[in-house]
Image (cartoon, rainbow, N blue to C red; front, side):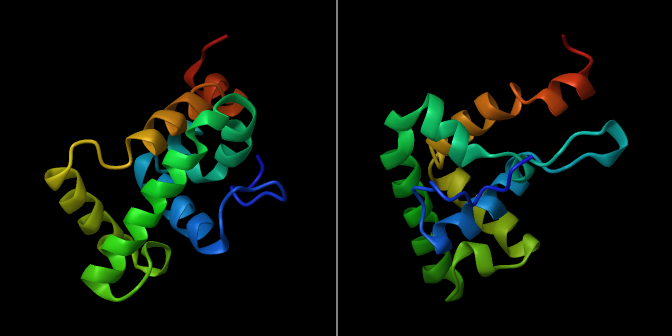
Length: 124
């Protein structure tokens, strides 16, 4: 499947790195079940095609995530280690239940329509 960073990406390079890291936390790969990470799918292409009205919200959420990461650690979210990323996301979710809601919703929409995921789940 295509990488998150696409030629028609609406994201900056920093936003793309942070999105990829966040997607891997939202739905990590499960090799035993043949399930890809959400980061392995083309969320940007999906949003461009099916949910372009969500682009501004996604960009805003990624900017807020990077700002929180910089405030807490001095680095952008995509530059942090997995444990630091997870801890920051846990903190942000506790303080704001709507944290990254546009990204999460579009990730789930994209993921559960992907051929590889559908096949691994045994769906038709």
